[in-house]
Length: 56
Image (cartoon, rainbow, N blue to C red; front, side, top):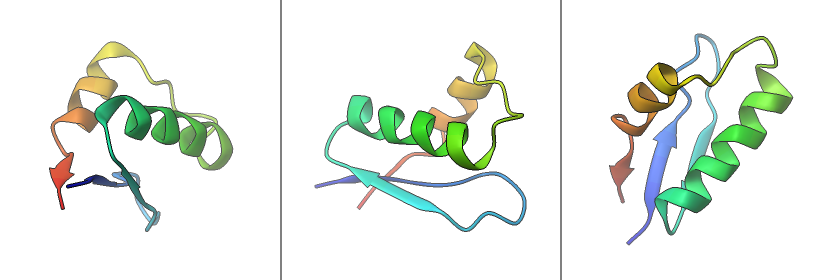
C-alpha cells in the first residue's frame, strides 16, 4: 500500500506518492517549496491537503 496526493494547485499536475503520511508530507513540502513558493503551508492548508490523500 502507498499513499498518493495529486497537487491541488491550479495547472499543476504533480502526483506525489510515499509509503507513509510523514514521508508524503515531506515530499509535499519540498514540492510546494520548489513549484509553489508563494503558498504558505499553514495548519488549515495542511489539513485540507491531508484530507485529499488517497491509498493506492
